[in-house]
Image 1 (tube, rainbow over the protein chains, first blue to last red):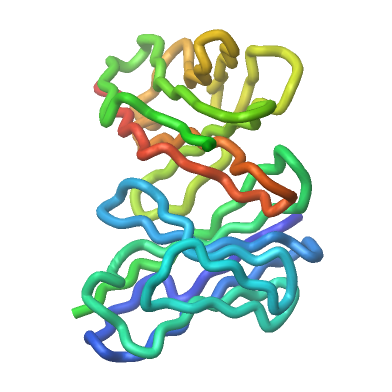
Image 2 (image 1 turned 90 degrees about the vertical axis):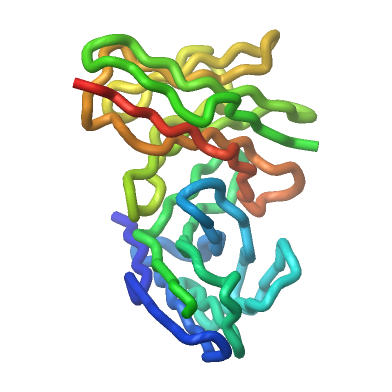
Length: 113
Length: 115
């Protein structure tokens, strides 16, 4: 069966510090991968998605970047965090194909102080 | 453009009563629709989806959803609510273009089931 991992679960970082969040998927090959941010326990904002190694699409301009160094690894980064980067970050995966649902990881709660 | 709307920020229902969480959509082409549930500080869990076929879709935890093409709706339902159903519910529609698998999510509806 497939599983998705995210770490760390919780992170408190000062403004201006770097960020690296990691997401890995097990039990599947060549998944589509997604990073979302959820602010204030509400709507989801799609940040990045990837359909293959090294292929990253950005949905919104921002202070963050993403990379996919391996087939089942997706990393969210920032060189300098802003207060507005605080939120709940969710990674998700899906298989290719129309109508396929996404499966979400447990999330990382980031607080920028 | 594809979009999905959840007109209610919160739905309150008594335990044992039927529940409905509303969702309407706007798509070009065939709609692929999804429902997810999120418990506090957790990731989203997939409940059910409509791709084609029977308009009544059955999913996890006793939930079902009815696809109504004429009303462009995909309401989530359950015959008898449990306190443990209290959570945040998201409706989503597949984004257009290719096989990226991108979904467009509604803003979410908080379901509160009171004992």
